[in-house]
Figure 1 (cartoon, rainbow, N blue to C red):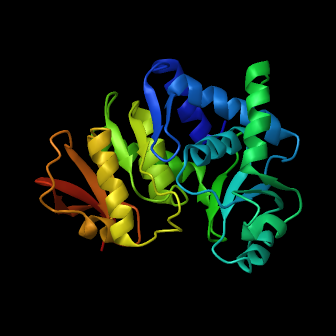
Figure 2: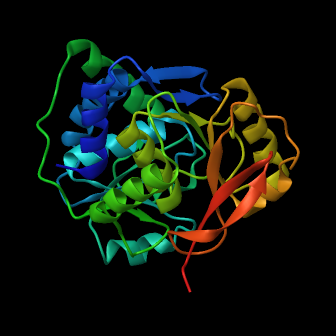
Figure 3: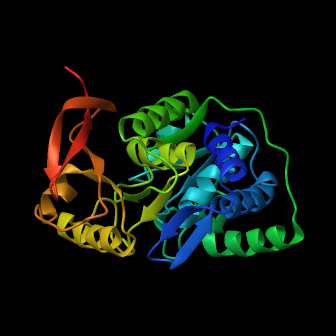
Length: 289
């Protein structure tokens, strides 16, 4: 069984009515039970197009549909792939079979890069039909790889498990926590240390409104969106990178915030040093010497 889907399914069983996901750009709140239902319905649609072991390429940003799509892919044993440059698809195709594309809009660069393009709008419409019909597809055997994020080196499901367990332990994540995930979901830090860790602990994933911000964007823009989410959703935990953290007001008054983690360099190890923010000492994540 796929790692991310397994976490989502277990969370739906343990905390069905609790908030799993908040997305400010979509004005959406989704419970753990609703997240699993949505991923199941989307998996039904995708199962007719994607075989286990193949890859789906996407350019979705930090929106709820990105989380749902990655959970659905996990259920099907399909790898989720991204690319910064279209030329990277050729190298990726030498590593894994690319079976199709899920793109944001008609202007998407990747729309015509691979056969069988499917817009997220159309995928969502089909998903809605499957959800209402309560259709479901069997969970496929766990695939070794979860994703290829702008690389031919995969993020494996074993790594997802480790990242989630490490983050949940270090941050002491628990039901009732609301984690502001200001980092991209198309990275091991965002989907593993953040989203998967929240699913494993029953904590809510809060996605700031970064609509229109490409990639990491301008730090000040991402910081502004992050602050709005921290305040509006009374977030207790923050996931950030050094660029965003430096752009945030160091003396921000955030009484609900109790901690968080800042990625300071390459690597995924929790480090001994910390980063200060809003009167709290945030863990740092990077590569041990």
